[in-house]
Image 1: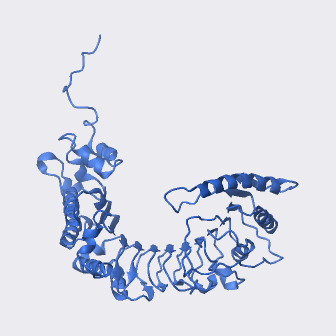
Image 2: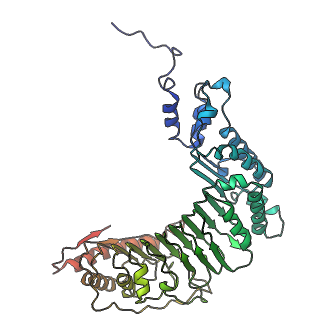
Image 3: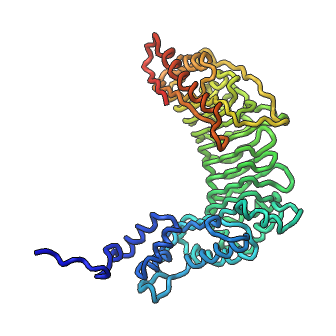
Length: 475
């Protein structure tokens, strides 16, 4: 017997018949904008955006002709999404059941709206069930930036907005006490205000400062023995040096083009440090330094070290140091990025001597066509250093080579590594096109093609008459 034909409007659709927890699981896979739109599909779905457990609102997603208009829309949307859905639209007790596990707000500084933001979020985060709560303060889009800066005329707008943010933090102590992540861009602070800000965030785990600076360029000393910060990022942060006096929970540090002295960092009491990512375009006033000058003996768990020279002077000195060997005793992964192709390669092997547990070693000597050499750039100089004759590294498993401008030099270096290691299993010959400019220029494309041919010739030369069991992979 055939089923009667389906009529439009006959009963609910199958998706709407699902229970709320399954519907929430579906719309939480969508972006916030799509989830809100889904909530407008039917009255059955209308309360669902008010029960999302993960909210990420970005001021860049809102439209307006001025910063004030954009932030008015942003604040209103935040208030609505964190409110309890009206009882007429939902029979469940949402106020009791609502748990916001993740709340990330990315916004512009607009004084009239800052207090509204703190009031809106406090009721949510003080329930103690929010695991990730982040503020990210960014400059407006290019269409709105003139309006944003014009508020202070010829004054130092970074300093003025830095003061505004500090006032915001002091007026909203409850919200800042619950922050787990804070990301700030293009603000200027006094040293004392920045340290007070960090101290006011009891639960802060991640701090990122991009294009920020100190009012008076000086050493930034971070001494927070009771903090739970485990990740610090400094990107183009203007200061002379960063001293991590005491950050006991710190595990990850990224510092790119920030400090104007060498050594740029001093590691004090950071016993949990696992990863260091350091990049710098050395200036003429900066002399090369030994890594042992940076690290204290408290750093014994370091496992990953990435150093980028950005196509300019090699700003570290190879060294044979018992102190460095003790600090690098657990180092497993090292990458040396973007040093100029005219420089020798053997100096990099001081890492093998200093890190007996090293398992992966990456050497990137790619020429970056986009690199601009300024008048105050340090002069490039070859680095001469040879490994000890009795060196036999037992744990290195993978060598990654990037950049093949001088084939003979690369072949000789790889052969030397093969001689100095007893457990090497794989060598990867890998190409990289410069990503520094928006448009890929013809020189980069030609270089990529040359690299492909070079890699095959290098592999053939390494395997010719070689009885080694090392696998050579072209990537």
